Amino acid sequence: VQLQASGGGLVQPGGSLRLSCAASGLALDEYAIGWFRQAPGKEREGISCLSNSDGNSYYLDSVKGRFTVSRDNAKNTVYLQMTSLKPDDTAVYYCAAERLNPWSPVICSRRRLRGDTYNYWGQGTQVTVSS
Image (cartoon, rainbow, N blue to C red; front, side, top):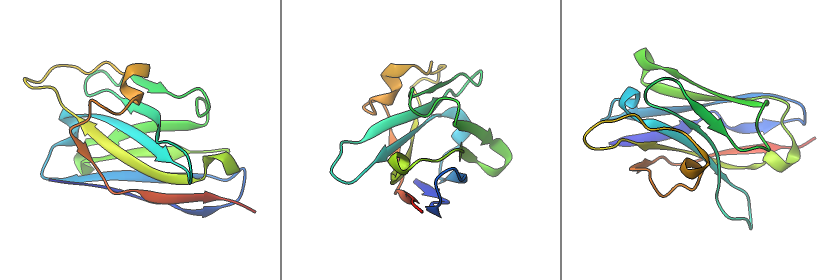
């Protein structure tokens, strides 16, 4: 089982990036997907959750309206579209996957941004927002 975040890079303030979370060995449509980030010297921060059932999503207030999560089940990939990026968004970004056993819907809420319910974590991708 492997989860991999990619798509990071250097972008100017106000710019956009789309991160991808691709999986091998598991079907992402069965999983709720969380996105997290960790900036230098700071604790890991949960920024979004995408449910495994009805498309329910939840966002950290600081990214709400700027970041959007989505799925492409055919590609077994989840995306994090980031717009209006700010220097404070600079961090290593990670995706994580959660599946309850037996399967049941995961309801995204602030609880899911804590990060302690996820089964799998991917390696991160660096996002740097700087002029």
